[in-house]
Length: 121
Image (cartoon, rainbow, N blue to C red; front, side, top):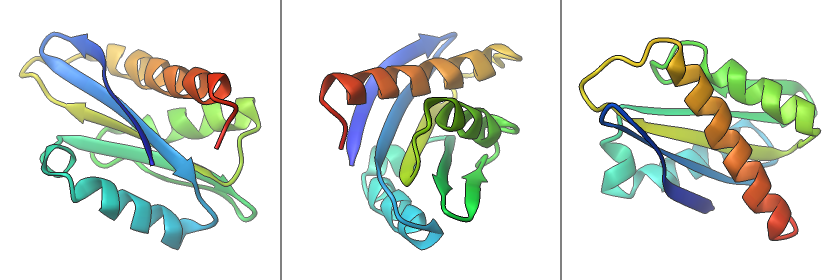
């Protein structure tokens, strides 16, 4: 799994983005479990994720209401199927309001750009 840490910081909250090829929901959950074996990610406030599979999108907001759908829409726009993307947030003590959606979008954009630079997975 590709992990990009420390990509966004705002009012104490910190973000990371991770991703990997993914065949189905079971694989997505296995990849997420592997990510959370790292204490840092297990202790995160939110690990929101999504992937687009043959049966459509699967997403989980992990308490960050609406974040999974933001990831789904970006994957659809990019045409990236069979790939899991996880946006992790460590809450910094101050609420971000609508800016949190902008940060989720930016995290996914950073991941997609990095993936494109490396020629994909």
